Length: 128
Image 1 (cartoon, helix red, strand yellow):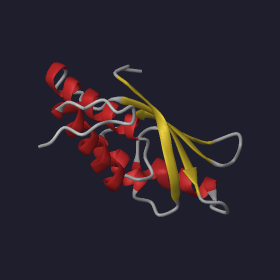
Image 2 (cartoon, rainbow, N blue to C red):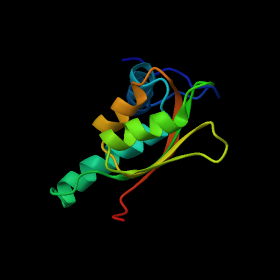
Image 3 (tube, rainbow, N blue to C red):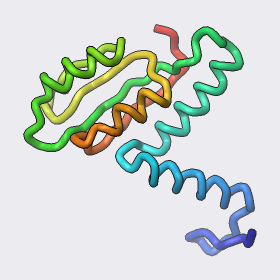
């Protein structure tokens, strides 16, 4: 592996290059999900599995943006049937706000909806 310069012209370490490749793989697999959200979710899942095997899902607060013209009430009802989390239509009527215990597999499923434009949010180890 060669060490390539970054945007400032300094050379990146091999681990930084691996991290860049990892982030690029995430973008390729989940182009409509915030990369930082995916990484944080994965880290928390791994940590929770180690510390609390019976509760390995991190708490996610998601903002799921949909294409224009999508019936958000219908999407919220469909999502409530699939996931035991709190779901509401945003006050700007441009997406859904979801909050609850969500693992990476669930996040991938939500992102696979062809009507989803973008998913942003925060992940934490909170147990509420």
